[in-house]
Length: 239
Image 1: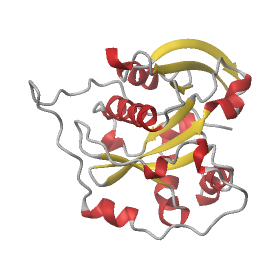
Image 2 (image 1 turned 90 degrees about the vertical axis):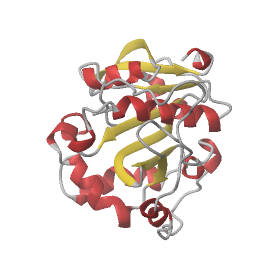
Image 3 (image 1 turned 30 degrees about the vertical axis):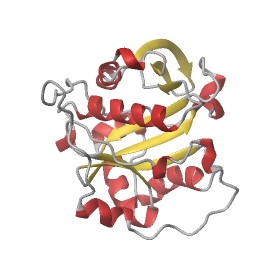
């Protein structure tokens, strides 16, 4: 069962500097270099098409008010213990419903890692620290398109903030904006970034709104009532 978007928080996005000053250029910390330098997994079954999502694993780090942020594709041998720990946090498990041992997390990751490339699971690395989990996926090729008003090349995101220490600080809003910008910058055919949090997950919905998404519709999935959150390329200049 695809998870809800969970544990983004609705805090405000801090401003950085004034006038023409912008955030500092992102720098790869030693920790992030080590993470990115981990040996890539062996080729998997099936014919993957990296063009389906325009290679999120190759998107560069970006500056945010909280530090340099990058999406790093999941490597199970390296990341499974961390992800399993996050999934067993009660606040995460309430919406993702993946509590259990490493086999539960692995069973969730495997269809994506062995699939055709329509969904890419990533760690979110902030200032060199892995602190969130993201799924970047083709919403128009997902079961979501059978239930909601999805358009060709819509790109979906699922996200969780892994550690309680990173919640309640506005990071959800900051990172949702950053990831939506990454998608729009690197997927020229995509006109909308979408998400479908549970309508009961008020902090998640609020974080999406703070990141420039709009509350487009509600629709029923088998496991929840979902809010369709949409970030439009056409409205990006107004944010």
